[in-house]
Amino acid sequence: MGWLFLKVLLAGVSFSGFLYPLVDFCISGKTRGQKPNFVIILADDMGWGDLGANWAETKDTANLDKMASEGMRFVDFHAAASTCSPSRASLLTGRLGLRNGVTRNFAVTSVGGLPLNETTLAEVLQQAGYVTGIIGFDYYFGIPYSHDMGCTDTPGYNHPPCPACPQGDGPSRNLQRDCYTDVALPLYENLNIVEQPVNLSSLAQKYAEKATQFIQRASTSGRPFLLYVALAHMHVPLPVTQLPAAPRGRSLYGAGLWEMDSLVGQIKDKVDHTVKENTFLWFTGDNGPWAQKCELAGSVGPFTGFWQTRQGGSPAKQTTWEGGHRVPALAYWPGRVPVNVTSTALLSVLDIFPTVVALAQASLPQGRRFDGVDVSEVLFGRSQPGHRVLFHPNSGAAGEFGALQTVRLERYKAFYITAGKEVPALNSRTNGIISGIQRKSHDSK
Image (cartoon, rainbow, N blue to C red; front, side, top):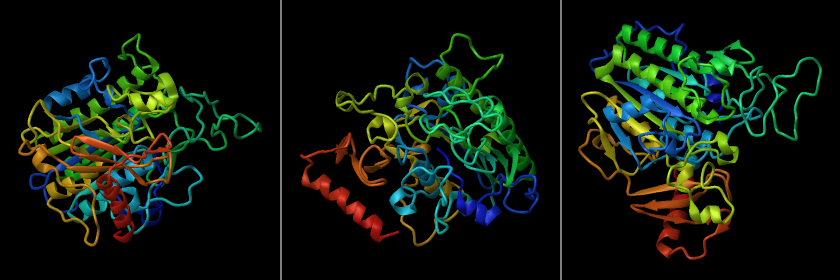
C-alpha cells in the first residue's frame, strides 16, 4: 500500500523533481559522466518465488531473468518491513519505522505521512546536483495510495471481488466487503488529477511511457538523475489486461506478472539505449505476497513457513517469517556490477539509501542514525558478507506495530513473537539484543 506524503504536499518540488514539465533540465551542473544515474524499481507484494531466476516454476519474468544473467542476483535480500508503507518509508530514509515514524500502512483516511523532519534520498541527491522523479502510486505520476483504495470502472481481480464505481445515487461503500466505492481512484501528474477513475488496464503502459520520457529528458540535459518507479504490480486488484503479445494459458496472477516484467523490460531497454554505461538499475520488492488473496497472490518459493502454517497462520506478507520479508532483488550496471553473479550476502532495502548516496558522492544527513549500510563492495564483487545482524519489525501480524520481533544473526534467526504467541525459550543474548535496539531506537532518533 502506498501513501500520499504530507511532506510532498506541503513542500512541493522540494521533495523531488518529477514535476518534469516544469523542471529545468538544462540547469548547469555535474554531467552524466561524472556522477552515475540511478533507477530504482520497486514491485508491490511480489514473492521471492515470483522471479524465474529464483524459482524454476516461474515462467513469466523473461526480462527480469535476463537482467539477472547480465548483473547480480541477491538471494538473501530483505524488505525493511513486511507491509507496504513502512517498507517504502525505510527505502526513502534508510531507517526502520521505529526511527522514521512510519510503522503501519497509511490509508485514504490518513491525515499525515512521512514526518517532515525526515530527509529522503531524493532530497540528498538534489543537493548533489541530481534531477529526481517518482513514478508509481506514491506520487507525482501515479496513484496517491494503494490502488485497492478506490473504485474504478475496470475494477480488476480481487478477493473478495469489488464492484465498479457506482452509477447514480446508490450506496457509496460496501462496508461488509470493505470495497472503496465512495471515491473514484485518481491518477495524478504532479498536483493535477489527470484521470479519475483511473483505467487499471492501461496503467502499466502509462508508467512505462512516463519513465522512459523522464530518462530521455534527463539524459538529454546532461544532468545525473534518480528515478524511483513504485509499481502497482503485484498488488490486488490485478488488472484486466488484453495485451496482444501476452502468452495464452497463463493464470490471472501469471498474466499480471508477465505485464509487470514487460514494463520493467521497457524501462531497462530505455536505459540501455541512452545511458547504459553510467546507470545503476536496482530492482526489488516492498514485501512478500499477500497470502490471503489465494490464487491472486504470489509465490514465497521454498520459504513456506512449515511451523507457522501448522499453527494455522500465514508465512507471508505482514509476518516476520521469511516469506514476508525476503524479496527478489537484482542489480544491473554494465561494466561495474559483475555479470551473472549470485550473491548470498545478507542485504536489505535499508541499504539502498546509504549505497546510492555513497555512489553519488553525496553525504548522509547529519545527526541521524541509519539502519542500512553502504554495500558498494558487495555490488562490485569485492565483498560478500553484508549484514551480520538484521532486525525485522512487526508489520501487523501480532503485537505492537513496528516492534522488533525477529532478529537474524548470520545464518540463525530468532523469533520473539510468532503467530501472535510469545516464544518462551529465547536465550538471554538474543532477548537482550532485541530489547536493547528497541530502547536505543526511542532514545536516538
